[in-house]
Image (cartoon, rainbow, N blue to C red; front, side, top):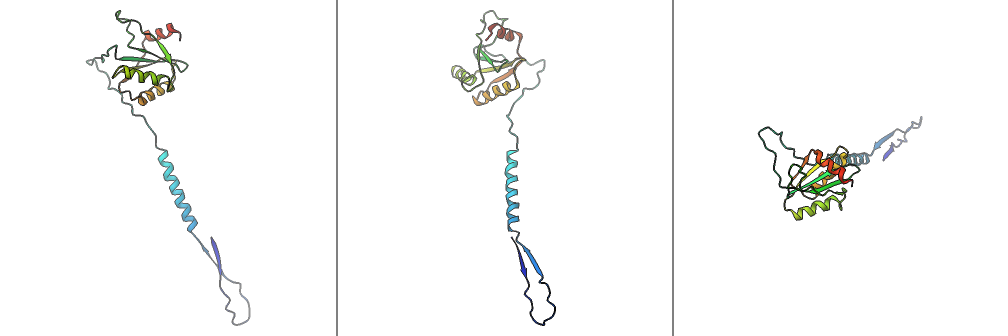
Length: 178
């Protein structure tokens, strides 16, 4: 706080009285406290400003001499991201060129913890190292892709791939009308 201190009058020789000269003294302690408070506040808020980024490993560009990775039908699970926040899934792969493989049974679920997460965890219990193929339709929202990648991270799914959706899978969705 500021204080005003006055000089005492010498009281000696009579005559003209002079106005008392006042000197001011400012206490800087609250200002220092405020400076440290602001410094602490800005140091704390800058740690919150750092972005959180999910690690995503992308494959190298495919060259002509590299083959596609072969996946066993029994090991695969396919998730189709559809419109209206629906996730379609089936076990195996939809290969219409191979007549020995029957057409997959398409099921529908949502992106909640009791939906697709439970299905992925159940598949992990059935198959030790499943490979999940994620295929997004043109009607799927960007949020759906982020949600399914979060589920891969939450369920600790090691092997999954983002794949272009073929016409046979789009036809399977249209036929099922779920």
